[in-house]
Structures are given as structure tokens and as C-alpha cells.
Image 1 (cartoon, one colour):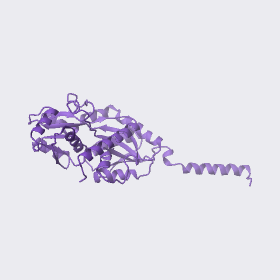
Image 2: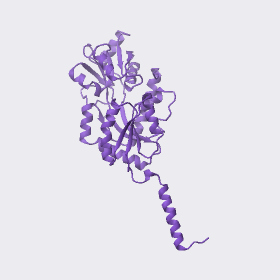
Image 3: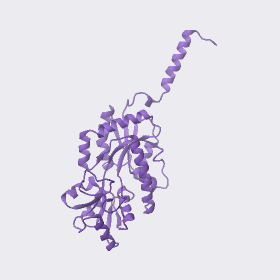
Amino acid sequence: MTFPFSRRVLLCAGFTWTALLALPAAAQKFPDRPIRLVVPFAVGGGTDILAREIGPRLGEALGQTVIIENRGGAGGNIGSDAVAKAVPDGYTILFGSNSLSINAGLYEKLPFDPVKSFAPVGIVATAPLVLVVNSALPINSVQGLIAEAKAKPSTMNWSAPGNGTPHHLASALFNKMTGANLTHIQYKGGGPAIIDLLGQQTQASVLTLSSVKSFITSGKLRALGVATAKRTPLLPDVPTIAEAGVPGYEVDLWYGIFTPAGTPENVVQTLNAALNKVLTSKEVQTSFTTQGYEAQPGTTVALRTLLASDLTRSAKVIMEAHIKPD
């Protein structure tokens, strides 16, 4: 059937308009409404505090409000699962951390895949872990701690701020690589772990620099080594644990932003550009340094690579130390 010219024009216009309407919202201008940043932990924790510092600034960079939503529970799995199953349009994003890689090795089955369920946006920051002892102890080096633990088996304890945390894995890895075998005493959070360490109920701990920096400065705790691959500029005079006599030792504690898998690449790159704008600002870098964090602006690939390596490393430590979920 042949239509008149005018009708053919109208039909083509109709098809074009229908096709435009069928385009996903993300393919149009992004963002054009508020964005939800899901924090998979309770209000007031370290992850939440960092997310609330980043969130408003990320909103300014994107020109939209970023709403922080805390969905804690199951070691971060509930909030992570909510984002994994969200519409992949960039309007629901995850403030993730090591919990993604650790939980993959800790739990027999997760409701999401830490790699396949998410599209990495970028690393936000790393929080250097530092091996500390109570300064009342006559221990001044990593090798001194190892020697003391081996000389007095079953008498020295770790303060571990929670089962299956990066701190727990860091101390378990130290035991495995050195044969020191300090006993883990599990606490419900870093605060109680630090209190007993200061009170000499425990002898050592691997904790975030941000949580113990003031005690190191005041002389109440002594820093023996940092768990990072290279010395941290936040504590430049303290050697890495690897260079202090445990070659190959490295544990990262990191934070990053993810979107659901399938989010259009242009949306992911828009989020990445906004995140990098925030992280390279002098104000944020100064704030992070003061708190004991290192800002990590970079590419989406950097976060993907970090997650992959951390999955392998965490799974190995969890298996060898026989760590089980609470």
C-alpha cells in the first residue's frame, strides 16, 4: 500500500518519537533527579562518616542532590544486595568497601555476585591499617613482637574489632606469615578493642590509622608497622610490615562507589568524573589526611582491579585461618 507523502511524513515522525520515548532514561541527560547513595552499614560508623562527607560534594559536582540511605545488616550484604537489584540507571549507587570481597569468602552463598552484579565507578579512599602495641610493653619493632609472642606462647592477644573485618584478616595473615600466633579477642567494634588495648588487657592490634592516630601521637600506643605496600605519607617514619621483616605482607582497607551492573557507560563515566572532581579538591584531601584517609582519584578500571585482587587475597586468608561468619 502506498501512502500520500504527507501521511508518510507523519508516520515517520511518529516512529521517531516512539523510538525516542523507548530510549532508557540514562541515555538522556544524566542526572536529572536526586541520586540515592546506599551505605550498607549503620549510621555513625566509619563507612557512614566518609560517605556523608563525600555525598553532598558529589551532589554539587553532579548538580543534583545525593541522598544518603543507610541499609545495614548481614555485614553489609543487605545494602549491597539492594543496589545490585536496583534499576541500572545511575540513580542508585553503593558506597562499598572491603566488605564486598571479604563477604564473598566468608559466606557460603551471597544473594549477589561482587563482580558481576556491579559496575565500578571509582575508588574513594584507602584507610591505612597500622600494627600497634601498648607503649607500656618493651616492644619496639615488628620483629620484637614476633619474638615475644614466640617466646611466650598463648600469653599475647590481639584486639580484633569484629569477626571477619579487614582488621581481623590482617592480624590472621600476620599470624600465618610469622608463626607468632597471638590469640584473637573479638570485640564489637574498634572502640572497645582500643579501650582494652590501652588498658593492657590485650597486647597488640591492627587498626585503622584514623582510629589510633591520636593515641600514637600522645604516646599511649606505639606504631610498629603499616600494612600498606608502601609507606604512607600519613605516618612516614613508620616502616611497612613487609620491610620490617615480613616480606609480601599487605592488607588494604578501601572504599569505593559502585552502580548496578548494566548501567550505561556514559552514566558510569559521568559519576567517575564527578567523584574525581571531589577527590582532587584541596578541601577534601586536607580533610581526609587529617582523619587518616588517603584520597584515591582514578579510573573505573582501578577499582575493578582492586576488587579482583582483594577477592583472591581475602578468600585465601579466610580459608587458611578458618574464619567463619558470626
